[in-house]
Length: 473
Image 1: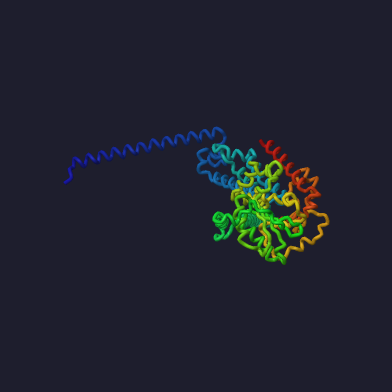
Image 2 (image 1 turned 90 degrees about the vertical axis):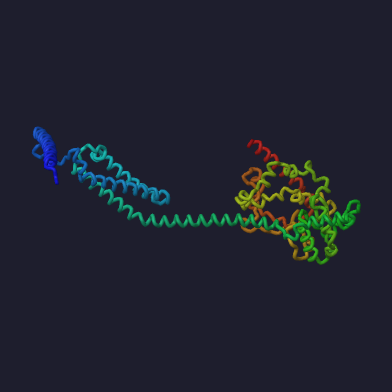
């Protein structure tokens, strides 16, 4: 059962709370009414009371809900978007190098027009200060001008689109051709480098041939030592067919001699002068003593046996001692070697060997001979070569296979024609020749003093190279 005293106390508490809330509402409404009346009187005293809140100018408080503000932002966004679009097309036009320098100027001008429009004083105030009331008539004028410029921009873009599409296709085709050409160049370089490796590789079964030949020489030295023995008369007989072969490759030298003698009609009339280095001399001697070669005569000597070939007489020996030259050949790493396929074969360290330069001393190495056929160690003879000795050289020093066609094997590929002396003395279009097989008239060589001329140019090279090195330092 509810206590009547408690019920009456709760009713009195509720009545007091209700009265207090009602008084608060009353005073709040009275304050707002008074403030509104004061503002109305102020407007009337300034002569603007006739329009009141219907005036076009908005108060600062009204801006928060002013429908013109989003509209103004939208106009500005459209202007900025089309300005960026015009700049983008101008950039593409520059990149594509259109005849359209005209188009570049047009798009740049369109972009500038948008900037100038938004920079006009009457429009700039719309965006500079949110506290300034927005005039609807100015917004409408801005919108009109923006739409006109947007229309012009879209029209120009539409007209230029075909030019851009064609130029983009052309540019894409050029990029594709360039990429394919880069791949082709890379493939050529890798192929050239691989061919150099393949050319120097030998079958596994022949890998230790030189070592096995040396083992045979050590086991039976009496069979292979020529020291103290008289020189066979055939070696110096000018009436026989003489060949010069300079190599440190036992297998390659054997192939050349074997192929030449197999195809010779009278192999016993052929004399082969094989010169190698000291390290391979023993193996070479054993190789050519083990086989008969159809009665052909084979002389095997080392470079060191020719005492006149020293650095005081031979300029190239002094060059080969140069640190710069050795660095040029031996610092030819894989990543560097494939950079220039044209010069890759010329950077082969084999060119540091004196064997590669002995051909310039043939008349001194074989003073009793009149003619010599020089053979490189990378050829295979396929027919009888005795007919070469019947050719009338007409006083010329060298006879070689003609390999010039187009620009192939011209002097311009081998000589530095930026040097004034070379430019003055040589013709860049003159035909060079391959050294695989050369027929030399040694009497004409001696008469023309070719070795002295070779020394002249080698010494000039050394002087010029020393000057360039000193200048760099």
